[in-house]
Image (cartoon, rainbow, N blue to C red; front, side, top):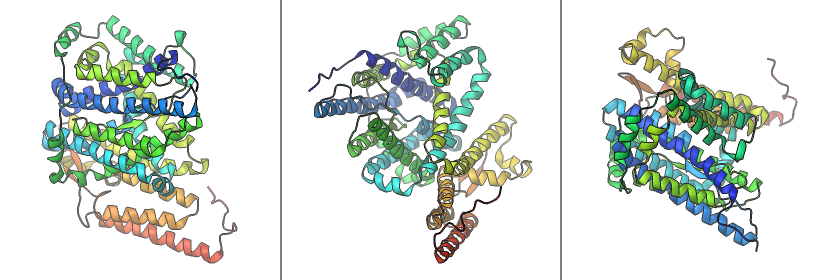
Length: 515
């Protein structure tokens, strides 16, 4: 067989590309955890990041071994290991829609962490189970529905938020953004083959220090936190949440995010196969699920995923990535990095990730399904709008409960209803739209019936105000009015299915409706 080296020069490029992406996610965990939930540095360094590190080691090293075995079996020397890391969209979804609401409702940031573990564990179970049911999922869930829902989160809670932050601090953030746009829009290769993400991060950091924005004293102080922080089992903390009703309460977040991870990882496996590396589907997806389960049982609230395969690297970049994050997370060096590197230097990378995810919703689906993608955006836009209203009311010294009767926004209560359980409702509405575009009325009726069931039990649309929060109103019949609406959908689509069968499935009724 051809010689398959452990490391090649392109592994260095691959390592920097993957590691910068993972590093930004680790920095987000620290910054969002402190800002949104009040976690201390030491809590993050001792209870969360060691578990995240071990989950990264498991996946990175498994996929490196998998690539080596594929090379041995095929006699090739150009096999690339599957990239692997923390799921960016799940990170934001669990922070904003699970961890932060629990903290806002209870004021208990440790309980918020425990419920985050539960959400991560639930995602891991779905990912592991999805490895054995992925073909059924692909047949019954339109790609446009999955990607539209994912893109809705990406364009609002990732791209939009970080675009605002970029223009809030332009002196630091706009230079890295320019470099990222040149790298990815123009596809320009930087001198010495340096990854654009690394160049943007370094330039942003140098600029921030040169402008005197960074705190040298805090940087020196952070060195004291460096030590050894081994992973600590969190199974007891995880199990303690099972009886609190939190799984049912946040099922509308957990299940769709788990499904996204399964389908997204599968699509990236297909991308790898298109580039020449055919990996077995079931073990590849199963290990991804195992990595997420391990993360939850060792204190990390954030699922892992397979990324889209890069070109040129082999296995060395994956081994280096696992080792790098093992070192920085287990010795508490992340605190030093957060004091050295300003968040504004890296947000351009996250902004770009959101842009790519959003664009993919159109690029990776049939052109005729574009309207369904737009429909899938609407619940996420509602969720983002409600979040903005809550922040404005809080700054004004009031809350939703007090202000809701006088909010002068046309359709305000409809916005509230649409954002409640919005990940499920986005999938349902986009799926209905896809099957109507394809004139598969019976399938559209099935998805409408799913909407009727979920709304009847309050998983979607049903809500109540609690201070400045909108919380789900879970229970039998709590969303009965919305359920009736979905039943009306269902009946209409069934009638059109019968009508078309009676006429035959010819094209005489196929003229486009006038605009």
